[in-house]
Length: 375
Ligand SMILES: Cc1ncc(COP(=O)(O)O)c(C=O)c1O
Image 1: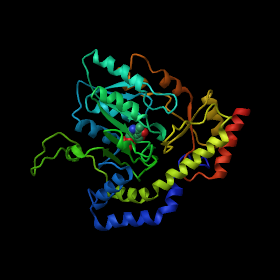
Image 2: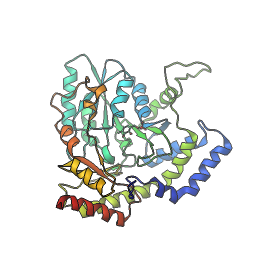
Image 3: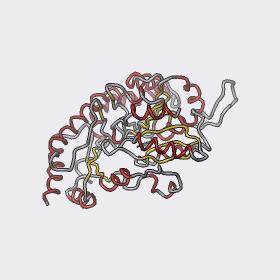
Image 4: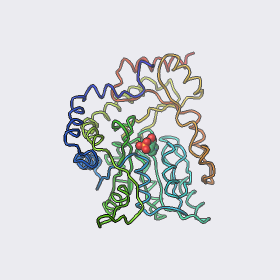
């Protein structure tokens, strides 16, 4: 086991174990394990934190995308644009509703969706039989995508814009959350995410509340207004009350944790600039939640082996973009190509990143990175 954790949930637990244990005990006492009061309380707290118009909690971040697409009426014959350089779930959700993912390239600075590539992909689709319906931008590694550019393109083609915020809830663009830019933002509370629970969880954040009733119905088997009637095909996707109780406590320290993550990122930047090719880029006015601290290393395999040899945890990201994965090779790729995606997949390597990474541990990690470059 590496002595420095890649993501340190135990230090966070040590900080708020009393509060979390008490919150879970309250749920065990009242016994409303499904849709208990903590779920609504958490939805309200997250809504305020992200300045969203409404929040609908659900079972995980993948369902959050599926439910959003269903609520928008997207299905067979529809094209949804997404990056290939993302976790598989972004594209998987599109396929699960019967629509077709169209893979778009990213920009080299933030690894967010490229608006020029998106425009080309939309024009490609307009030449064929699919109907362009929505764009899913991913805020990769915690940095928000360029929503000003992406919404200009989406608006001009009348497409819905979804922010897959699974890695970046709490990130900001000029002080605003991505839920204030995109029509819908979806997120995941998978334990390793910046805001994680103690199991699976997810949420949909809305810029306007017109879809709330439909989303709640879809997440509850499509139940209708009349008792015993289900007026749409839905699914079972609810945030467990216990997880909502955990998240309520974690949300109270989340702002502070984001600040700490940014201190860690600043320290990495100070110690590694001039050593590595470039330290991760943060766009002016943006705040990242640093779900990953990913650097680009020419000889990544040797780097990963060297760091692991020093008992330091590191990870390659994403060596196999979605368009190259077996189940996804038949889906369309933008005609101008995925140059950046195919470049970054070879070089991106993530270093340990969490709010509790001490100066001492970071010094050890940075010394090892320097050691690799000097070897
Ligand atoms: C970008 C992205 N989208 C979607 C998801 C799916 O979230 P979940 O695992 O909660 O379904 C993840 C999480 O792994 C993710 O990183």
